Image 1 (tube, rainbow, N blue to C red):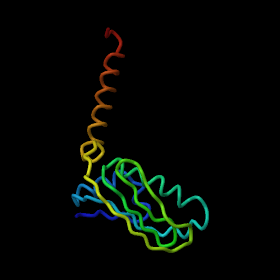
Image 2 (image 1 turned 135 degrees about the vertical axis):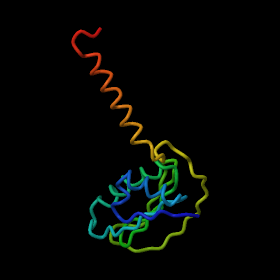
Image 3 (image 1 turned 90 degrees about the horizontal axis):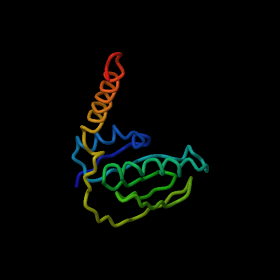
Image 4 (image 1 turned 90 degrees about the vertical axis):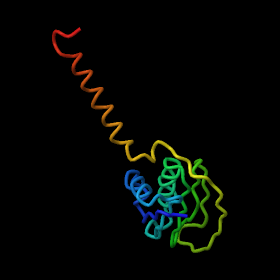
Length: 134
């Protein structure tokens, strides 16, 4: 099994996560963070809600381990579980059974392809807007 680790806020960056997953040919994402500085606010839940998107975008599970916050598992189908409370400690075990899903977001060509389509659309619309063109 190949694992791509994401340190704290790296999991909020979709392109960086996609590149790392592709480079390491990973089967699993992990997020290691210390949410203690969030204190007892809802920020640890908001951080978790944002990083869960990486699991569904890339079709692989993401395991989150925090030093003093909420740890959990985010599955590729969008479901997730969080354990613990802010400023708490604990140890958890979870069984993982999955098959990586190849989603379009895993492709390294996704952004260049979308940018090319946008450029082609702009050129086409600009050509039609020229004076004297039907």
